[in-house]
Length: 102
Length: 172
Image (cartoon, rainbow over the protein chains, first blue to last red):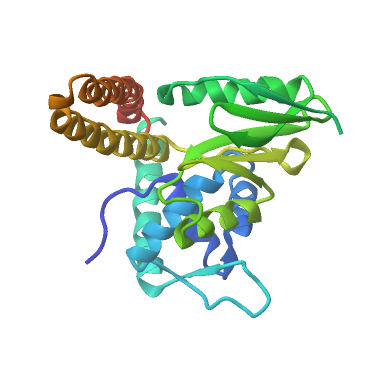
């Protein structure tokens, strides 16, 4: 079923950054970069969000490579669909806003 | 390296003040280095070299889940200082970037709910033990006093939580 509820900024960026496999610190850095420094994910908040997203099967944990403790995550097909729906919703918001504020 | 140990008491609802105290100390060139029960040891550092954060973990630091969390935080450039029961203390060099454990209202609220839940369980067990011990006069009263104090702590933290919840209604 398509999710129609708005995503939080944190979830939106986490899903975006995980279109390629990344570990926690990488997600934090890329989010900061993509949002031009506006959105900062704190480590504890990110940890909780990653667990929730794994439980929802929007992302999954990749097998840990030998000799590394760092866990990597990647988006799932379900996650991609959520992201696509959110993008449609956001575009609609922007269009409505631009039209009314002309 | 110069060290100093300070004995200081913070009530459980004063975790914000506790954290602020560490960061004031860090600004003055003393960074938290180890923790004990109402006992804090600082080492000399450059003024403002570190940011210090604390958190009540969802699991004990010794458990696999607790260790997994600590590893995750350390991967982001922070250092685990130690713990007192389920409270964990972390520090990070400022040059390594900003350091916060929580970046949105939801996770701050969840943290407070975690603290309240833990305190409620301890309060309830104190109350039950207290009632069972009532026939030994004074003994039971100590437990009941503990339960009352913990109940008060829950109320104080719940007030903070409610203030945050109101804020969230405006900013999703």
